[in-house]
Image (cartoon, rainbow, N blue to C red; front, side, top):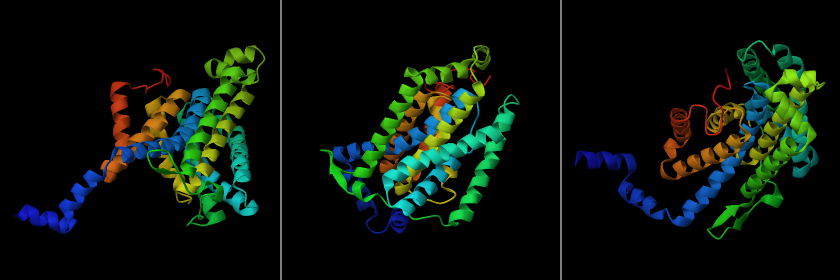
Length: 316
């Protein structure tokens, strides 16, 4: 009787009925919709992890400012959207601006630290992230900016399992385009071959006459541009404020570790996996959703310390 009264005080007179009703409301269609929602969320995680893995895999730089570049991309995207009123113009221009910022950072801040150990650029980018956060606070205010879904992408479409937001489908499609374009660049072009060769043996590339410093500059810029793109894509789905990149950075590192440091395939697969795990846990146990992705990371590290697609000894 005491347990029952405690239960009623906690959940109200209809506590047990509400719990049973929630359990009965979980249908196959709802599970399928939640799965697609997880894929859409995982698309953002995948984009973030791709940029992070690209920079680490090619330069062996742990970029702790990656979440800040994501945040800058969201703010720059909203600025251009307010300036032009054109979402598509903002979507194209924002990665170019954030990528250019990445070029400046690599050339004048990160490059002098090459060869000094992995902790030097790590500490530098950690400090840089807070500089960018303060810069956005000064430029746009502590509260941030409001964000809305573009008019042409509002509403929902029927997937046969129920209605699903158009914008989230667009996020999935945009991620697929970026992944395919990056794969074609790395695997099918001469510059992609140079990038892959430079990541494995920079000294041999120098002997062959390749300016490896330009390769690293381009890679860092591309990684930051992808972070900026993921920021502008994610802006309509979350609050845009100077601290938004801090939380995202932790999630992107979880994805990178699960997929394997430096693995682009692992970044995509792990991003989708983490998104699905988060979405499904949110359906059954919302309070444990944040914890679930870290539990996933712990399990992967216990079974395969280098990640799903990573190579052992990469940091050695």
